[in-house]
Image (cartoon, rainbow, N blue to C red; front, side, top):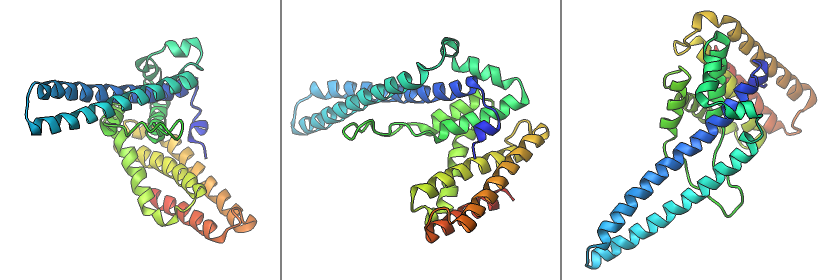
Length: 261
């Protein structure tokens, strides 16, 4: 159930996803550096004072500064790795486009604005800082909500970026009892994406609500066809060879249907 394929996202759309994710990390690194600068200033102030408690405080600040510096190094390395694998693989023309350039290529048409929602949804759901190896934990993203909402504002979608995250989180909470294995999680994420999209097209958050009836019908058909095919595989072909998993998948699909009716 591939929304991006169904709605024919082109190379420029895929490039925008890659650049948004790179920018996500860049903004996070900027936040880390601001904290490091504040810690360094505090460190300097404490070093000019004497006394037992100031010595203890200095040890704490030294440790915090060291950890912040380590996080920055790992996050920079993660971004360099992402850019090497995803940005560098773009052709020279796409690499030369800024995020604003790529948004401009979409925002002028109804279908382009529909695709911007799908692009934003992929950016929201793409994890960053998954470990490159077992020894390099890089920490959490500091201002995810602020960053994602700034991206959605650039796309003309107000603060819908974090709403996408919250809607997916709410769906996963509803079906938590069903999420025992990776197959269920993969299906649930696909169901969340397509039902988020359907509900967006129907909502007042969609600036082109009166002009996107065809896209809404396509998305609804995509979901119903996926649901029907999956149910057929589960019921008639014993898809997972595990009755409990099959029942969990059926419940996830039915819960997804409830979200859009």
